[in-house]
Image (tube, rainbow, N blue to C red; front, side):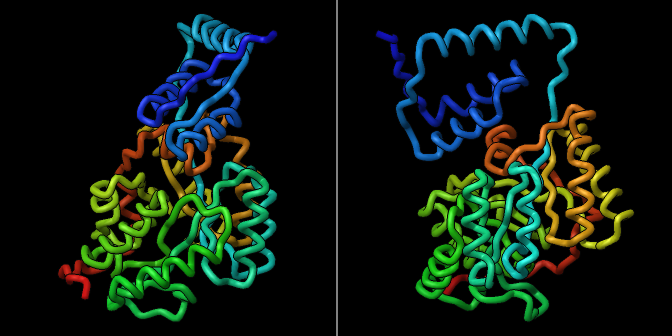
Length: 318
């Protein structure tokens, strides 16, 4: 009878163990890493592997460490989120990109539900691209937007409806939100809802005065901030410059997070250039793995990429 080893994976211990194994043995299968990571999200679970498998994994890690003792260079990590998914039927073309490219899908858009299903079936990380009130009024917020004048009951109802409109959601990032994200009252109420659903929150950083990270961290919510916008100018030359900046930042800090949009030129560029990351010893990872591998320690975004917005006075929630 094959000996089966029952291993308890505890969230507080497993995260560092996964990272340690990945860094020692870069050949460690990324799908295994992702599956283990997703198990951790649920809390403590039982993981069953055969004794032979455990021995094989240990030997592989030891061999890789010994073979590369003098030459191994710690890899850097990049994660890319494609925002504004769901408006157009053509957004489905982005499912051709590697599954490590994460989707941020707008609530209640015509193609949101189907694209959320398709992305989940691919094993792709799906986020809710939650519209939040901006300083400059905009008709581009769309359905499901959270406004600073809403009381807690209305915020909760609107958030729940938006979340239900996109399947397979594991986290949130903000669509617009230059006003909402710098007001402590509404943001605190939103983060209570996010924590209750055990989701993470990525700050798109549409204002340098955002309080997303500080409030999320106080609530125990995993969080990170966007470092680079790839394509807010939709020219091939600009996207290339931003991509090079993304690589430089990842090499300097060990990791970097970018946001792009479902533009034709963005799709063409990423399809051609993502394979080149390996030449720079950079691993492309989904946003959930990025949070684990970087221990959610956000770095300062490129100041040139900030949308300058005036600071607002904190207003209490009604």
